[in-house]
Image (cartoon, rainbow, N blue to C red; front, top):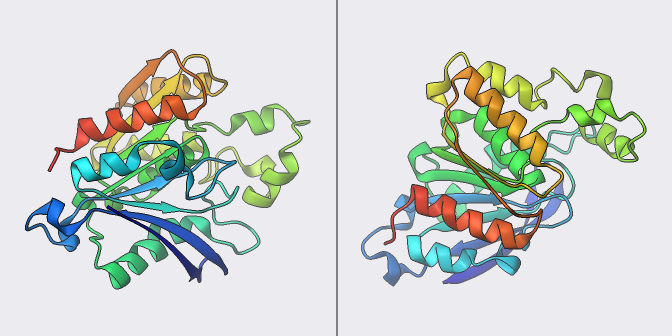
Length: 255
C-alpha cells in the first residue's frame, strides 16, 4: 500500500490544501488498471483533518482488502460548504477534486466507481454531495452525521452561531436553503431512484442520535430507501472504525 500526502492549490478554495490518498499496490489488483479501481472519498469531522481516518481506523487494511483507492481531503471546519467569503469547499469536493485526481492519477470519475462517506461533519458533507449531486456517486454513507441544522435556529444563544454565520450566511435563511438536509429530502422524494444507495449508522449514546433517527424516519415517510444501523456507541473512532468496515463489506467484494 502507498500512503500519499499531496499539498496542492485548490482554485475553488483559494488556499493550499493537504490531500491524503491510500493507493493499493499494483500487484494486489491483478490486471485491474488504476482507471477502473473503485474510489472512496472519505470525509473527516469538525475537529479533524484529512489524516484522521488513516490515523485512527484500519482504513488502510480495508483498502488493501477491497483494492480500493481512498481519497481523504482536508476541509477544516467548513462543513464542506461554499462559503460567503468565496472559499468554495463544496465545489472543491464535487467538481475540482475529482477532475484533479483524474488528470493527475487517472482515477475514474464515473458514478459506478465512486463512493463517498464521512463521520460527523463529514457525514453531513457526504450526504449533501450525494443528495445534491446523485449523478456522481453510487453509494454514500453517513456515520454519526449532522443530518439536521434546525438546532442552530432553535438555540439562538448557541456560542457557535458566529462560526455558522461565516459558513452559511444569514442563519435566519438557513432552514429551507440548499444547506438544509430537510430540503435535500424533499427534492429527492420526487425521484428517489436517482439517489445513490444510502447507509446511515449512529450510536444510541451520542448527542447526534436524535438528528439521525429523525432523518431516517423522514426517509421512510418519503419513500427513500436507506440501509440504517444503530447500536450502543458514542461519537468516537471506536464506533466509526466498526461502521466503515460494515459499510464497505455491504457494498464491495474483496479482491
